[in-house]
Amino acid sequence: MKPANRANPANRANLSNRANSANPENLANLANPANPANLVLRVVIENIRPEIDHGRFPIKRAIGERVDVRADVFADGHDVLVAMLRHRPANQAEWLETSMTSAGAGSDEWIASFEVHEMGWHEYQIVAWVDRFLTWQRDLEKKEAAGQDVTVDLLEGSTLPIDDRSHATESPIRRVWVDRQRGATGAWYEMFPRSAGPDPNRSGTLAEAAAELPRIADLGFDVLYLPPIHPIGTSFRKGPNNSLIAGPDALGSPWAIGSDAGGHTAVDPALGTLEDFDQFRATAERLGLEIALDLAWQTSPDHPWVREHPAWFRHRPDGTIKYAENPPKKYQDIYSFDFDSDDREGLWLALLDVVRFWIERGVRIFRVDNPHTKALGFWEWLIDQVHAEFPDVIFLSEAFTRPPLMRYLAKLGFTQSYSYFTWRNSKSELTEYFTELTTTEMAEYFRANLFANTPDILHAYLQQGGRPAFEARLLLAATLGANYGMYSGYEICEARALTPGSEEYSDSEKYQVRKRRWDSPSSIAELIRRVNLIRHSHAALQTDRTLTFHQTDNDHIIAYSKTSFDGLDRVLTVVNLDPFFTQHGFIEVPVDDDAYTVRDLLDNTDYTWHRGWNYVRFDPGIRQGHLLCLPKPRI
Image (cartoon, rainbow, N blue to C red; front, side):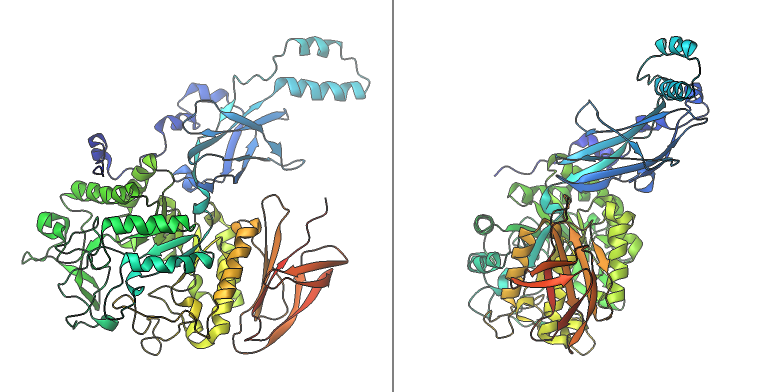
């Protein structure tokens, strides 16, 4: 295999700048009183939507999605205005144009849309002008209707040019980043391959883990995410349940990356070789699973880079390298990179090479560990560098941190983001949070990936609610989110925490092998399989942009619907949020027919419902929700 190409040295002086930042030439379009040419522009274009931070960041779409553009367009006087929406892939010189229409009589808001059909950068811009010919035509019709002499007016009209844009106002150019469809919708499954072997006393291999792939594919998942598969350090290696004292057989944490066997471009010898990984990935892809790898920018004390590039790490006054801390927690088995070191250029380029290395081995999805603890400018640079060569690469931000920081990471270019879904359990919490995600500016750049659990997070709701809680959270995650995920063990309702009040799993896979019985009586595998099949079959569940909540008269019951972009597919989800007791009540359904049939996609049962409010009942242990296919709207 060819070695990864290093970044163009010409780019090294601009490591902290976005590769596709706003073009300075666009600034010439801004109204500048010092520019005499702008003084004759009568039309004003402002309040363009969507735009993020006045164009500092792009909006996001996936192939086939639509961009609805709105702006306030007005001028002095009463002349007729014309506004056009221009759009194009950024690599094309010619604009495509769509006429904008006024939102209504007396309104200065103008509207138009366009669809995107290629990955990568797209641009859009509004151009508007006073149309003297249309103004003359409108006034002529009024005069004729009033019986006035229009002889002179006809002569005047013969001298007017048509579609005269000589004094048109052009808005600044705004950008759209367009991902492939997997960036917008997908079901993720997370597994530790070392737990897939037959021997509970050793790490399983990638070849042994391949035997699990048909089971995961049969559940209907699209993406298989693997925590770090690299060599694990031995210094300060953690034992079971994060014990500081590790026995001779302790496997350590996969996030303590690096040993004499290699670093971020090597495979842990206990798992196998790079060729074994290639075979594992190829097998997964034949089954319809795309592999996602973890990007964890940290090392163990034994990583080769610690010896070769000590300047990439932070040091104490005595010259030793600082281990990671989140006081009072200490992580002696982890060294953090110093992204502001004197040799940050070498560090940043080396990390880019790691990403390229795995891309060249066929990986196109990366789950990024704790990006909020690394330099923000680094992520903007890295993602742009990668997308310039590989626009199909997807980056998932694993950042459970403060809202502004999570939002900023999404703006910087992360394709998807972990969310607060795990901690939103009541009807009011879910409604408020997902209304924010889908109806505010966040919808233009923040794609939430709703993980029902993770190796770090076993919420009290799951610990206490038993199988009904797992069923409810599955239904919510898979239908509220076009992207959702679960960590291995969810399908058999694993719910034992390390200590009371803790969200840590007992006997966590982060530190040891965990053997499971997939035929457990508590398994909800069939429900997972059915839900994922429904997601694949219904376009309404493959978007977040049409989510609408509906009224219920019981706060333990939540109801919401999604509609496909063409309006033909509508799915209504109703979930009982109470895993302990029977709940029933009425929901208001958005169908205008006096009587109609809804089909529950979970069991293909038909119900006759009526206009307005309809009754539902849920008994824990029997049913936690409905996924109802609503009638197609009448044309």
